Image 1: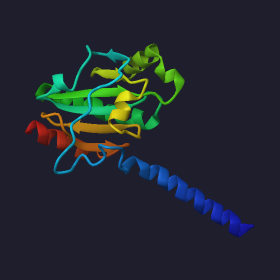
Image 2: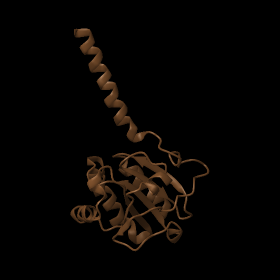
Image 3: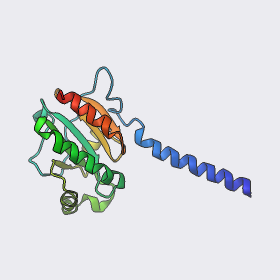
Length: 181
């Protein structure tokens, strides 16, 4: 009995560690954005609503550095990342950084526009937010995680990606490099 409980405990630890590793695992087609030939950033597709902005396109953002962040308002990891994303927006918007939050819901109540608008207000988010209820932009990026960040250079190519919390200094350094800071 003791042996089977130990085996079950170890199996549980292994499962938990695999879930936490998923945050740094490659996702979809854009997972290896740090390659010699970076992929073009997909267009915002199937967006239900835009908050804090008129509709944006990747084409209209050419010449800017763009941070696309996939999030959902009930995800604790996303909530923990929001202050860092807001700080990047506040620090570098004047230098040419455009942050676009792509709100892709995990649960049904996160699909309701009023709930997303309330969350944007509650978190003090002033940068553009796209509501991607149908996962069309999510799928175009081949994304698999919340939160996920994709950094797009001035020519429209994905040059960096990060999944989950952390690596805030590394992400900021990449942004500063692209902005020539």
